[in-house]
Length: 196
Image (cartoon, rainbow, N blue to C red; front, side, top):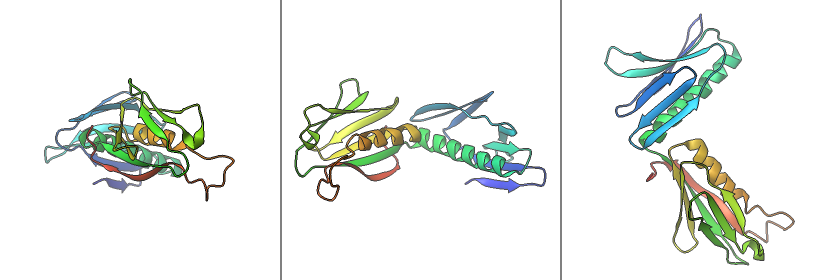
């Protein structure tokens, strides 16, 4: 649970670090490591300070401080708190997105390349050339069943979401009536707790 305290002198947001998760801050870089892996990202904004503080209970907390209570600082502090919580959840449990392959007119074939760096969709609306979607680094894409579901999983929520969006976007229909041609790949579920 995140505590947000708005003092007269500024903003103070505390994020508890769960057991089994290690957080290191080196300048602008924040690294979060856990049982499923590690994520590192640069978090910096003028007037905001991120540090690790030890509590009386023996547990550690990430503390985001801002000198002023201006709207911009409040918004950025909240954004950083969300990023850090997502990083902690990712290294502890992981994230997944489920997509459904829908085809009525032309049976499309979906395949992941050998290197796992892209997803290929063949025979979409009868096209001869396959459509290719990029898979972000650190993301795993699996095709379950016979052309039914696509499961995108990983520890970095942004990379998993971007990969799912890339796959969904390559089957966007242009120039056809979407009420008639409902072929495509659509997001049906997303959540926490992937087999990464």
